[in-house]
Structures are given as structure tokens and as C-alpha cells.
Length: 320
Image (cartoon, rainbow, N blue to C red):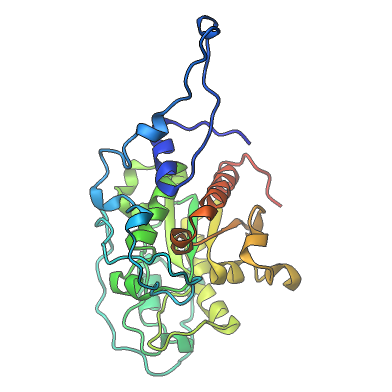
């Protein structure tokens, strides 16, 4: 599949560590002396001038050597997200009063399948339907202010401490890398710019597979993932995505729960490059950005996954 990239997209890919080679253009008068290969990607600024400095991904060489705070992603001694905050979103839903930390498990709220955004947000903030909520400080959610179509839904792994503190998914350097990756294919998370200025094909809705970060960190079990999936299904119904980008092991585990068990148990690396389905929506599996910060060699694979997701969202690639 060929891909036409402009100067800005090449600069974004260069920030991700992905270098794209393209034969130099020649004319009849250039036959004697071949034209040099284009250097736009090498000389372009690291981030577009109109983007705030805080939205640019910090170079990997400057990442601290402390371990990652997220226990759900592969560990590495190379790098970890810093405390640099992401740029403030243009629009943000009003904060709800924070309920006390849950201490017991109760039944799941009824009527989730018919909830609008305000009702769904309130139900998530008060949910105590599984043990993952115990000791929770606040859920992690970036709800839309109203039903807005987003062709992309990006599903991440359970939140880490920085995401719980920010009350939104994909923050700090992992979030900055993801923003650069999405911009490279012409997509932005809905709360970074005025949503009215973007078409549905340019908007991405980001959400974690679990909304809670429990006081005692542990991996969620199948029952807890399926309980929180009730909220995810409603998020899908309200945003109407044309593709779901699964970023991480637990996101993949939930979205591929309807596939044959022998396939769903395969490592993430063996499930990428294909199109799966969840609730009749195409799913593309790829590496989480926190993992890519520590494993730069896999950024080229993640770029291929993004190209596949874009082809699916645009209808250029048939889905099973």
C-alpha cells in the first residue's frame, strides 16, 4: 500500500523515530546529474510551529532512567514517562463532585445501553461493580460533551498513576507520542481542538479498557474486564467509530474475547497486521505508546498498524 506524505507528516514520523524513504523526483534536464533525495523530513522542525511546545514529544535521549509507573506495560530500564504535563485541552466536560473511595462491590448500574453522555459519565464515577474500584481516587475518562461522531476509538490499557491524577487517558510523554502518531495520519484526539473544526474522520476518542486504578495494583481478571466492557460498548454506540485501535495487552484481551481462544492468547506482536472485530467494529492491534518509548525499534511496526487502521477507517481495506 503506497502512502503520500507531506512535509508535516514526515516531520511527525521523524519525531516517532520512523524514517520513510522515497525515490527523488527527476526531470529530463536532470538526467545528467541525479537530484538529491528530498530532505524535508530531516530539516523540518520537530513539531509544527503552530503546535504548543508542551505537545511535542521529548527526544528519547532525554528520558529519565526511572522505571515506568504503569505495571500493565512491559518494563524496561531505558526510559519512563516524566512528569511533564500534556497541553491543556480546548474543551473539557465540567468536573463532577468526587465521590468517596469505594470500599465494597455492588451491582452494576442498570440501563447503561440507553444512557447519554452525562448519565454514562455519572454511572462511571459512581461504579462499584467489580473489585478494581476498591480504594479508587477517581475514574479515568474523557467524555464528549455531547454525541459527536469519531471515526477512531483508541482503547488503552488500565490507567496508571499519572492518568488517574489527570483524570484522562494517555498523558505525559506517552500521550505526546500518541498525539504525534495520530497527527501523522491526519487524526487528533477530540479534546485537543474545537471539535466543530474537525470532521468525523479527523477525530479520535480515547478511553482506557478499565476506568479505575485500584489502590492495590494488580492485573484485572476476565470478569472485571467484561464488567467494564458494558461502559465501553456504550462509548462505542455514542461515538460510532469506524475503527478501534487497541493499544496494549489488556485492551487486546477484551476486544479479542469473541475470537477463538487459541488466537486471543497469542502475543500482541503476532496479532498485529490483521483486522479483527468487536461489536461489529473493525479492530487493529498495536503496541501501547509507553512501550514504544522504551522500544524505539518497534515504532516502524506501529506506523504500519496506523496505516492499516487509516485504510480501514476510510474504507480502503475490506474488513472481515
